[in-house]
Structure formats: structure tokens, C-alpha cells
Length: 114
Length: 112
Image (cartoon, rainbow over all chains, first blue to last red; front, side, top):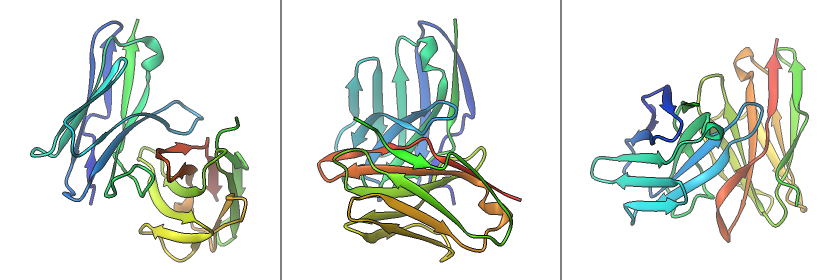
């Protein structure tokens, strides 16, 4: 049973435009959500997170939106840059903090076209 | 400041053998988690160690076991290897004062 779903395996976006990556979840107990970015031959790198008590968190070019009623979150990257090309994973935790067990989606491969 | 380190980088084992993977957490971190990432999938949680004890465990059989040492480093042991155990094994560290888990580069295990 896939509790965290990323339904788009891949996404291509022109450099300078907005990239929107989506994630859906089914477990109502999830309280903390994170986005990780992964380059080949490296481990996932933390990008941004959001607690279930918020609906938006922003960090530079990255913004995460959370819609609890729809059990949906999205990551917006604007403007997109070539270095953003990577696989992006959505992850969720039942605890209040991201240092507990994480449940990951299957990832979305983002390609930024120069 | 060294991040999370893992050894070895790659490993090839035969079905039925046993394997030990090692992880050193980021400086200042006291909690270590292990994840298995199969090809085309997201990482799956195996277990987490804190204060040398297993604190949480995912849906993995008892063939998967671990240990945490007083210096917070950790080992993952897998017995009676199956072909399906072939995967990238990721170690992540965290602490009670910072919420995010920092991942190492992983160990690529191939079982033939």
C-alpha cells in the first residue's frame, strides 16, 4: 500500500519557468512533510519541509504548499535553473519532526531545459 | 565538517551469504536510520537507532538487524541474502534538535 504517491514519474520545464511537483498521501496520521532532491550516485539532500499546522513554507526559490483536506502537497521552484535537474522525493512522517520514520514517494525526475 | 559517511560504496555477494554495512553519522547527530532503495522506488525505512537501541522498525524481516555503537556509528547486517535484497542502502542521521535527516551516499549491494 503506497501511502505517499508521486504520480508523475518525470517532468520537463524550460529554464526560468516555474516547476511544480505534486505529491498525494493517504495516511491521516502524517504530521510533517519533506522534500528531498537526489542526484545520481549521491544520497537524498533535504530541500524544504512543512508542518501540518501550516499551509505554506517558503525558502528562496522553493515553496511547499500543503492542502490537508485534499491530502496533497506541492513543491514550486521558481525560477527553475539547470542545476535543479534531479529526482525529487516527497516524504512524510507521523511524528511532529522529520527525524522520525520517513515514508517516501517513488520520486519525480525533473529535467530543466536550457 | 564531514557529513554522513557509508562504507563500502559497492558490494557484491552471493545468495545465502551475510553482509555488514557501516555508517558514521554527521557530527553532532545521535540518531541513525537505515533505508533500502530498490531500483525505481523511493527509500523504504528499515529501522532507526537511538542511544544504542532500536527505536522504530519498518516492515522488514528479522534477517535485517542493526547495531549502534557508543560513538553513534551504526551497522546494518543482513543474513541469508536473497536476490531481492539487491538495492541501494542509505543511512541517515539526525538529532533531537534538528528535524531533518541527512543522508549518506549509500552502499550499492548486488546479490547474485
